Length: 125
Ligand code: HEM
Image (cartoon, rainbow, N blue to C red):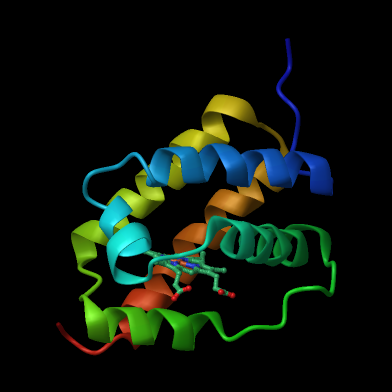
């Protein structure tokens, strides 16, 4: 059976839930979320969902400064090239395991581009 595309909020929210299940179970990346940033999932996940709804659906909700948030994180604990690589692996495999289609492709392309820009904009560790 065909997998759904990331073409509505319900699918994007389900993607983010699956993505974070994997990020938070990953020994390399989980500490950034749980120890360094000590995120409150009830606050963090809605931001991530709004972010991807803005990028993929053009919804206006997300208005925060993502790059500055990662600069601050990077000062506390450096985000290394291998961390970006792992983040992208988990992102891409989560998309591919559950979704397919034009928006799913676009999500992977955007994530790759934004991760590369983010990495370039951070000072060396
Ligand atoms: C090494 C890779 C990455 C790691 C370890 C990481 C980790 C984190 C952490 C711990 C936070 C919470 C920070 C806080 O609330 O203080 C966060 C926020 C966020 N991240 Fe990342 N991130 C990575 C890459 C990316 C990339 C490539 C994107 C976009 C394509 C992204 C999108 C976001 C967004 C939208 C937020 C929410 C910011 C907000 O509160 O509005 N992250 N990230």
